[in-house]
Amino acid sequence: MSTLCLLVVFPFLMAYAAASDILTMTIPNRISAVLTGAFALLCVTAGLGLSDIASHVGAGALVLAVGFGLFSAGVIGGGDAKLAAATALWLGYGPLVDYVLIAALIGGALAAGVLVLRICPLPVFAASWPFALRLQTGRAVMPYGVALAAAALVTCPSAPLWRLVLPA
Image (cartoon, rainbow, N blue to C red; front, side, top):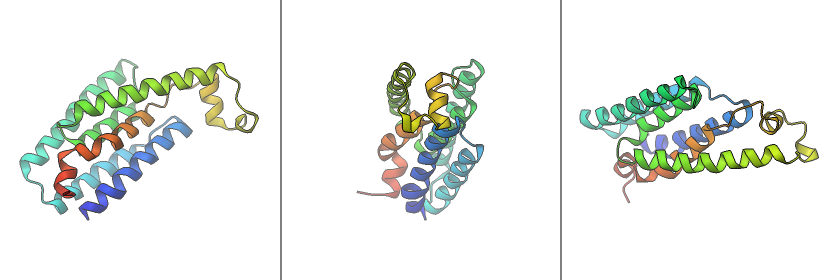
């Protein structure tokens, strides 16, 4: 069951969050809720100790606090803050700095791509896609959930939880 959570549930939910953010500019609350619930199930099936669980919960709480500070300042969306916190819950403290740095790099590349998209005309086949129009016209902010999800997938193999459940 723990292997299923790591290899199927977590990657699927990250991909779903990214796709939802691109298409609708929102990350549904249920994604973060399911990530949190799946983490709880993983803790039980993997036999994590209380200190390990507390460490992961602490990482999630720290990212949630920082994320809501950034949300309050208008820097990121609420869905982004919740997704980052749920991801930190899975990663723990160890790879947290790597996660944030990789998300920032991917986010910067994504922002550059969106800016290029805004100065170039849309191809005819994409001119009727609502999400492409939102991104191209500038009526939408950047879908930063894509960067958060990609950084999570890049970072997760280095997390202690993955090495515990999936020994080499």
